[in-house]
Amino acid sequence: DVKVTQSSRYLVKRTGEKVFLECVQDMDHENMFWYRQDPGLGLRLIYFSYDVKMKEKGDIPEGYSVSREKKERFSLILESASTNQTSMYLCASSDPDRKQYFGPGTRLTVT
Amino acid sequence: GENVEQHPSTLSVQEGDSAVIKCTYSDSASNYFPWYKQELGKRPQLIIDIRSNVGEKKDQRIAVTLNKTAKHFSLHITETQPEDSAVYFCAAFEGGNYQLIWGAGTKLIIKP
Image 1 (spheres, rainbow over the protein chains, first blue to last red):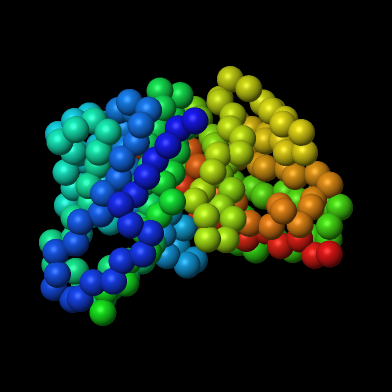
Image 2: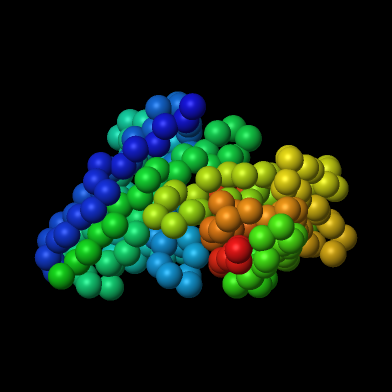
């Protein structure tokens, strides 16, 4: 069974703080993704990575950065958290058949 | 780039009836079309997928059909049960960018 884990289920941060969200997968997948999910807006891609140290912007990269130093780990960074970044963040990895496997999500609240 | 539209946004059906959710895509080069189910408070999970060389695929009560000419694909759920209540997302694989392009989701409500 593919396992994708995320560092926190719930996180509360203050405006202006630097926030790190971590994602780890155990299936040696090359591709990893960070999504943001808001009611009525579906899944919006923030960044994805197709290899170690490689990254590509998704649809809404502004205010975010990512890091992939090891194949199994993909981190999302909010350089200076703002209230409009309050959301559910979902990490995923995909197998060679393109099937995506999601982590449990991190519900981030920025106050 | 690819664009995926999903309809309806909300679907309410009587338990035991069938439910159909439709998606259209724009890029004729897209070749992989998965469907994900997300129950309340849980992660999206793949329930069925289809590739462009196949017209239909079934797995027990769920099926997906693909019409490449019209560029649309549909999810069919028969004999709906309360546990089918969830949000369903369709997606299309945009080959050049490694990423899935997602529909906006359909909230399926099963009425007892």
